[in-house]
Image (tube, rainbow, N blue to C red; front, side):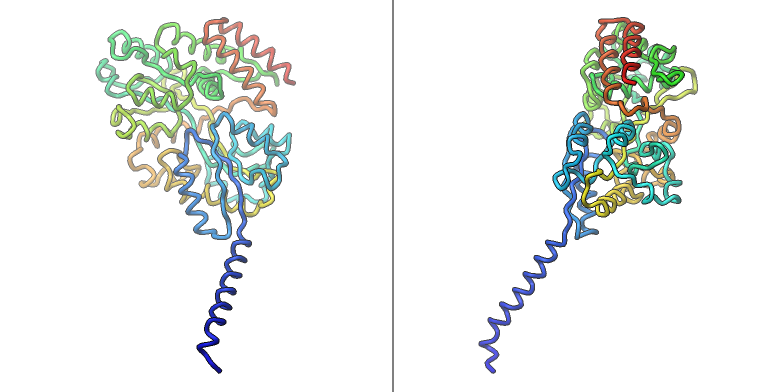
Length: 417
């Protein structure tokens, strides 16, 4: 037998076998699609890094990522309903959507997938984000609320020794800062006609002891709810709130505060480390943070701005989707990326690595995460939010009084039933 003559044939055979093996491996890969948002909480770079680590550990799964602004997230999920292989497998959803998504069958019930012992290690406020009618529709991923940020250097310059403990003190300190010419508009908010406005409003409703419904009906004219919008308008009328706040979203607030154009700002967790980064902030090192104040001394207020990851109802790869969700929400991954969004796991807050460099944020979070007020619960939340946004904006634009605006909002909300 001539071995030399056989070698080319053997080589071709070997290459063919290898090629077939690689083809089989490629065919065995499952591709899933995941929908995320581009603002607040984890950055797009963080999510891509997490996903790359996941695929290294799960070489049989490819993850196609799509990012949209928060304002487009809800409609993207709804539009993809029933899209099958052309839809999403994993979707990021807000705490306010499970009622609606359950009604229209947009998410898979994952109650049976949840480990009861693990869920006890997660903040109850986080689990409530993904729970509706005693069923669980995903795993919490972003545990978030709004905090009061303040410029320490500005307060010191004004002779103010401690940050405000009530919203009345916020107003009083803002007046001092303005009178002394330290900053033209001490306050900045995200009051654009968007969901961000509802989050700020909810924080103030919580502070003033208000509620969104009475006797089973929506009510935005109760004393606390009315005082919240009256406070908002008052700070505009006094020239304490930057009037551009009526067009701002959270990123606009961050940039304004980071540029040194405000002494106080209400914003999510992610702003703390970004505002303290000298590469993207002029006030790095002067950023203070406390829980959003209450209406009375020693009180605090907070809105539930948490979000979960769920399996889309139409997903054809629920097992792989669940593996991805389980990885993204796991404690090691959340602890590693805890600079823009804090973990859902209680014990993480005592981890020195998580605390490092953001001790004031962790201290504020330990208080705020236990008192978060949820926005109104309804399966028609999108319509209700639009009603509130429109009427709050009319008040802030000085087109109607707070009383008239919230009366209209209440009547319009009643017609949703």
